[in-house]
Length: 353
Image 1 (tube, helix red, strand yellow):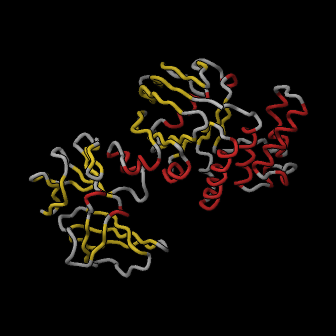
Image 2 (cartoon, helix red, strand yellow):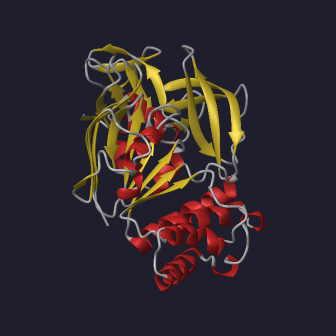
Image 3 (cartoon, helix red, strand yellow):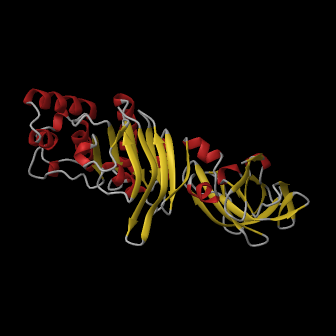
C-alpha cells in the first residue's frame, strides 16, 4: 500500500484559513483517524488528500509520489462518503462494476475484483439487489466494496457511519476493523465521534480550528493529553476540570490540598472513572449529588462541590445515590492532570509533560 505524507499544508477560502501548516505522516498500512469538533478542518484535510480540495500551499505525497497538484483520479485513492453515493437504478454488482467498466478494465479482472470484494464484505447474497432493497449497513458495505474493487493505495472514509443507527454503527465499526486487518491497507478515517476514534485507530490526529493539537496512539492521548482541549475531547464522559489555587506546591480546591502540582497550574483535570467515591464525611472533598444517570452496569453522578464547582463521577449501576445525597470524593494524585493558563498540559499523573 502506501505512506501518506503532508508537509506545511495550508488551505484558505478567501481570507478565512481552514488549515494551518499541517504536517503529518501516516505510515504504510496504518489506520489513522482524524477527529475533532464540527468545523475543525478534518473533512477539508481528508478532501485535500483526495484531491477534491486544492491546497493553498504545502505538499502532499502518497507512496513517495508528489500528488499535490495531481487530479483525484491520478492519486490512487478511493473515498467512501457518508451518503453512500450509490446509483439507485443499478444492482449491487453494477454499482461496484461501474467505475471499472467506464475505465475499460478487462471483464475478467472486473469479475475477479467484484467477487473478492463481495466475499470480504459478505455481500454475495445481495449482488443482484438494488439499493432500495438493502439496509443502511448493507448500503454502506456496497459503498466500501466500490472502493475495494479499485484496489487503491489509500482508503479515505468521510464520516461513513454517521447515517446509521447506534446498533449498526457498532456493527460496522467491527467490520471496518476486520477489513483493515484483512486488507492491511492504509486507511484514513474522519469522524466527530471520539468513541469511533478510540476503538478503531492505530493513530489519532486531533484537530482544532484547522491545527493539529496532538497525534498519537489512542491510549497515549487518553493518558497523556498534550492540551486541555485534547483532554476534554478524548474520553467519554469528558474529563472533569477544576480551577485550583496553588499554595506551597499543592493544588487547592475548596481549601483542601489535592496533591503536588507544577507552580503554574491553573486547572486540575481528572476523568470521571478515576474519581473515587466515598461515604459522606470521608475523602478529600465533600459534594452533593445533583443528578444520577443510570446506564445499566454503570451510573454517572453529577455532583457539586461546596465551593460551587461541578464534577461527573462514575459509580456502580445499582447505586442508590440520587439528588441531594452528600458524598465524599478522592482525586488520586496519579490520575490527575495539570494545565497552565495557555491550556498546555504541565503534568499528567505527576510526570511533567
